[in-house]
Amino acid sequence: MSQITLYIKTFSPLPRRGSDAIMHRLGLKLLSQGLRQIHGLTYSSQALEYRGGHDDLTGKSSKHIILGPHGKPRLADHPEIHFSLTNCPGLVACAIGDGEIGIDAELPRDTSPALLSKVLTQEEQKKLDYFSATTELSRSSANGTPFHDSKTPNQALSSSDQQIFSRLWTCKEALAKCTGLGLNTDIYRVTFRFSDRSVLPAAAECSSPFRALLPLRFQNKDYYLTQNCLPSGHIISICSAKTIDRVEIRAAAQEAMLRN
Image (cartoon, rainbow, N blue to C red; front, side):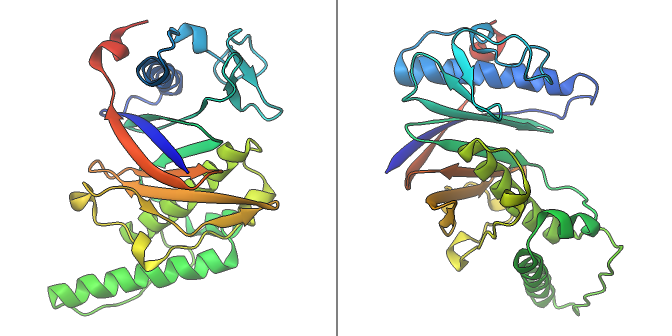
């Protein structure tokens, strides 16, 4: 079993220009903080840099980091320590554990249904429609208003569909990072299944702990997933090659964000 420590920093979304590089550096600072607090290792965020030009994996990397065939970073001197970084508008996160791990986060947003046929399996597409319809029906019943499902193929996703799509998409990204294979057609063909116990509460109620999803088998190996929705509305999914016993959330230390 594995215990995962998750460092999170939330903030107002940054202007698009240059934001990716800024969030990447913030992620390295979270990693630096975590390695120091959990393992007593002192690395500056610069010492952990593994993307030379940030968007170019062929750029110069730190001697403390080695990259896998598809760009997955590892600590050169401590292969027993595993980590994964993610960022999206308004959030940066770093997960650290003792086994292969992958993390992804998304802020649900408008997504064209045309994208569903490319990245979701047919079973996932059906379940997305089922869960969204169930959610809307429950809300309509609670409000005493009639329920109408008027979606068309060219219509933008409803807010409930946006959340469900984000749940599925972050699972795929987390699996891609955990395996180190990156997103590819094999990942797209994986069907992620939600149980009744893994239903996430509304954003206003997101103080609950991470909820385990149904495990899956990919390329003859078992993987385990857990997921949560933060008060900010962000969906976070974590994938591990070990069963996940606990996810401990730690806030980013302000001094860590200011330190080089």
